[in-house]
Structure formats: structure tokens, C-alpha cells
Length: 219
Image (cartoon, rainbow, N blue to C red):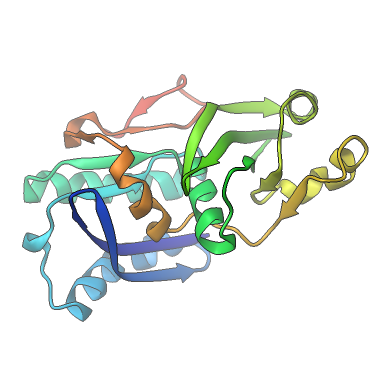
């Protein structure tokens, strides 16, 4: 339950972090997303018209948080005539790991609770301080996830369900680290912008990995 906002500037593919605001709590996107954007801009003497683009995580993750966040981004992009950078929320978590723990040249799995005994799973290689997709994001049941963890090279596991598999992975690899203090933050998304493509607001998709197919429109 984290609503993370950041302002970045980009010049010749060089990222500069201007400011970041993180809000935690129940239904925090409902309460703080738009007020937080307003505050972030005001504190830095900026206005919505000063933005050149908007970026957001598109899942997989909480249905409600994704709907609120992506709908707000899409609405702002339409009204301001801006394009959008979108990114896997699991990849943002992997990039947050780099910022928080200065990790490099490692393989990382992100595991989130998808309820109904299922898990959202991301797999990334960290190279040159950037989280690079090593496989597509997946929705796996417990048995499938156990096989995935055993059959792939993994150095670090993060995510809200990582600790559930601590004992299991220790049976075959004591070198795998379990880190529980990593959340997907907007400054990490800012680091990834240089690897993403701009798209039109009407093309914004949420990656639910369940429900009405693999991908679904925000509209």
C-alpha cells in the first residue's frame, strides 16, 4: 500500500532526480495520488503544464491501486496532450532494489501475493545498474513457483511473499538472499525511463495477469 511520486529531469539520457514523495497506508492511492501530485509540483515551483511526459507502473499488482493510478495518469495525459512511459510494476521493484542496496550483476526474482494461492512473479538480471527482463512476468501457483525457483539462477528474492519461500530455497541454495524491505518507488521508475518507449494515452494497458485475459484496456 504505497503511493510513490517523483519528479525527474532528463537530458541526453541522463536522469536527474528532482524530488520524491512516498505515501503509505490503506487505500492510499484514493486519498493521496492527486493531492500528492499537486504538492510535488507546488513544492518545486512547477505546474502541470511544465510536464513533458508522465510515467507509471502498470502491474501486475493490486487491482484497485492499478486502476486508480493508471486512470489518473491517462486522464492527465489526455488533458495535457502528453505521452506516457509505462513499465512493469515488478521491474520497478527490481530497480528499487538497485537504488536501496546498490546491487549489480545479480539475478533477481520479485514475488507478490496474487491471492487464491497464486503469485505474481518477475525475473530480472541486473546489469549496469538497470533491471533487465530475463523472462516475462508470470502468474504462478505455489507448485509452479517452487519449480521456477529451483530451476532458475536466482541471487536475490524480493516482494511481499518472498519470505514465504525462505525455508524452501535454503534446502537447495543457501546463497539466495531474501530481502523484505524493497518496494516499487517512483524514483526507481525514473531510472528506467531511458529504457522505455513513449506511447499515446489511449494505448495505456494494465497488466493484470488474470481476470479478463492477459492484458486489458484501462477504458
